[in-house]
Amino acid sequence: MEALRYLTDDERVRLLARAETRAYEPNEVILDEGEEHEEIYIIVKGSARVEKTTPTGRVCIDRMGPGEAFGEMSLLDASPTNSAVTADEACEVFVFHLGNIADLLEEDPVLAANLYHSLAVTLARRLRERNRAE
Image 1: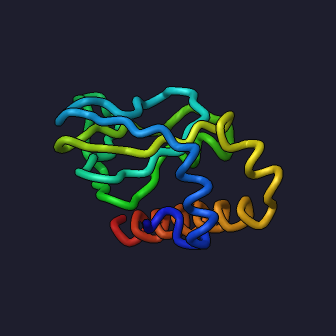
Image 2: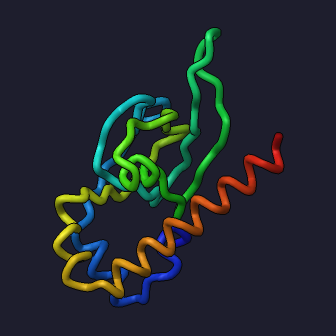
């Protein structure tokens, strides 16, 4: 799973045991622009598009598939989401609520470091890709 690449197999199993699984239909909004939340989402099956609101409507700015994470920026800096994520096709995601994993991260600083390392690499990759596109 790309979004959790720096976790060991044991750490991944322990973290996934605390995840909620949700299913979304095509064109169903998974995470809306401007929402405040405390979750990280990882796509398990299907695909989704990242959309920004413009004066003429929503515009697709990226696409994601299995193994990719989203929602982590808002979780990390406690700010509202700056884009929406909508299912392109039937989509299944793991949802990690901060309240469900906070104690695990506190009890196991190595797991926490590995998770945050994974999220940092995800953010860096996205930033590089967007900078190339401009």
